[in-house]
Image (cartoon, helix red, strand yellow):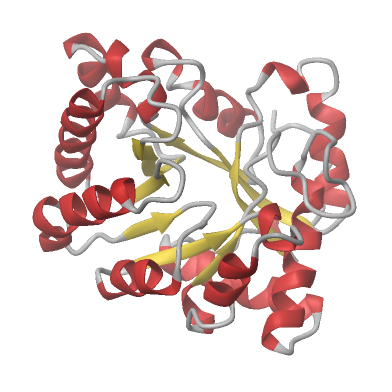
Length: 278
């Protein structure tokens, strides 16, 4: 069995065949999917919840992505306070810093990141981190991990470094603060030795896998729309790096997911169900 711990299934890329995409994932052995609640901005953070309410095996997050940090306002924070109480919401994210695109000013990104960490602490939810530095630099990593160390680690709730693209020292810093490290399809890319280097060192009980679909489709699907069924390719690459079978990689990352989020494996997550919940 496999868990796709990070999927943007609300995206317009899935508007024509979303149910078939979910069916293919279930048929491929994906027992649980986390629908990320960013949408296209603060007024769409319930997008993951809407999917989680429709399917028993889908969980959700809520959060304002650093790209849209400039759009955050008091109404959005108040709305998320309420949504955080939903029974299917298991984390706050993805949140963090993006210095590669700089769609929002960096000082605004930091302010919105800090505000959301404070709200997540009150809600007692772990955080899902997006961190992308500018080319050839560690600037976003230094700022992001520094803010987590100063403002988040004291709460003991940890989180997930999603779609990890950093170096081992950055993974180690996050691990020391109680984080899980999640690897996506770029683990399979030929020009990604540092990602594979980190994946080879992260303790086996601290690893998750994801698709980040519709982005970053793994080899051999690279260049196509990504979807949850393709998490198997990431599991296979992780298995190669750690001298495991793909099934073992799937089992251990699934166990890690349920243990970290303190979830019980329900009958719905174990048995394929290709129909939406009533």
